[in-house]
Length: 427
Image (cartoon, rainbow, N blue to C red; front, side):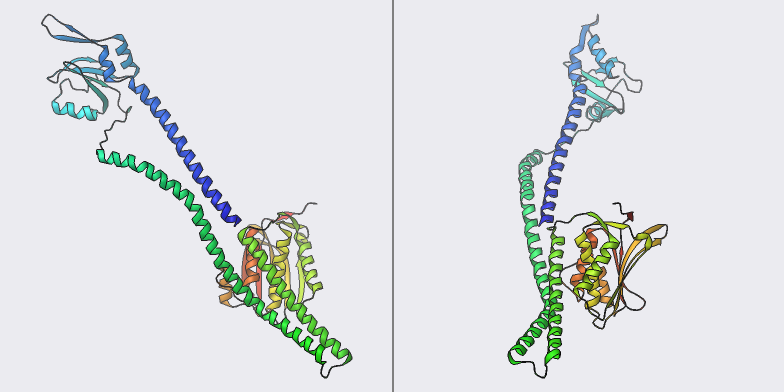
C-alpha cells in the first residue's frame, strides 16, 4: 500500500509541477511577447500617418512631408516609409531602399499589404487621398495572417471549460482507479499466496499431525513391543521429527511475512554496515545449533583478504537470505549433501567483484525451475523451490545485488550473488 501511496503522490506532484511550469512558461512568453509588441506598436503606420504634413504647390498638387519626430521613430527601427497615390505611384518616400519599386499595381499592393514587400515586413494605413506604407529591415519581423471560421473559434472557446473539467476529473479519478486496480491485484496475489503457502505447509503439517497422533495413541494404549530405553528413544525421535517439521512451518510463515513486507513496502528496513564474514559464520552456527539433518554437512570458506569486508544493508534480511539458501539445499536433498558457503574475490576483466556463493552437491534443479528463477517475479505460481528463492531474489533486489542461479558441473545447485563495490569495514 505504501508503494501505491508513493506512486499516487508522484503522479499528483508531477501533474502539479507540469501545470505550474505551463503557467510560468505562458507568463514568460506573454511578458516577452507583450514587451516586443509594445516596441513594435511605436512603428504603427496609423501612428506615423499623424506625423505627415500636407502642402499644395503652385500647380495645386499636394506635397507630403514628415515631422522630425516621425523620421526619428523610423530611424530607431532602421526602417523606411513611402506614400502611394491612387495611381500606384510613390509620391513621397523616406529612406526607401533601392530594390523597392517606385510604382505598384493593384496586384502588388494586395500582395504586400497581406505579406511582405520584397521580403521587407511592411504595414499600411489608408489616408484621405493616399496610402502610407511603413517598412522594416528584412529578417526582423515574422508576419503571417491567420484565418478561422467563426464556428471554429466559438467551438474552441466552448471546449476550454469542458477540457478543464475533464482534466480535473481525470486527476481526481485517476488515483482512485489506481488504488482500486492495486487492491484487486493485491487480492489476487493474496489468493495465490494462500494457495501456494497452503501447498507448502500441507506436507509438514500432515507429518506433525501424524506423529502427534501416534504419540497420543501410544500414550493412551501403550507402546506395543517397546520398553525402557527403546521406548524413550522412539518418543525422542518422533518429537524431533515434530520439532523439525514445526520449524519448517515457522520458516515458511516467516518467509511469507518478510516477502509481503518487501513487496508492499510495509517493513522498516535499515541500511547499516554489516560485517559479512561474521554474519555468515553466525548464521551457519545458529542453524547447526537449532539442529539440521545429520546427512548434511555445512562448510564456510572465506578469503583471508575479505575478513574485514562489509556490506551496506539490513542485517536481518541478509541473514534471512543466507538461511533460506541453506534451508533450500537441506529440504530438497533428503538423501543428504554437502553445502558450501564461499565468500571470494574474483577478477572480471579489469574489475574485481566480491562474490558470495552458496552451493551444494545434491540433485540440483531442472531447467524449467532455472528458467523460473531467472524470469520476472510473479505470484501466479509458486514452484517447489518457489517461496524461499523468491524471498532471496527480493532481498537481493532490495540491496541491488545481482543473482545468478545455475547447476554446477557435478549437478548440484548454485546461487551466486555479486555484491556491490567492495569496501573495508571501519570500526
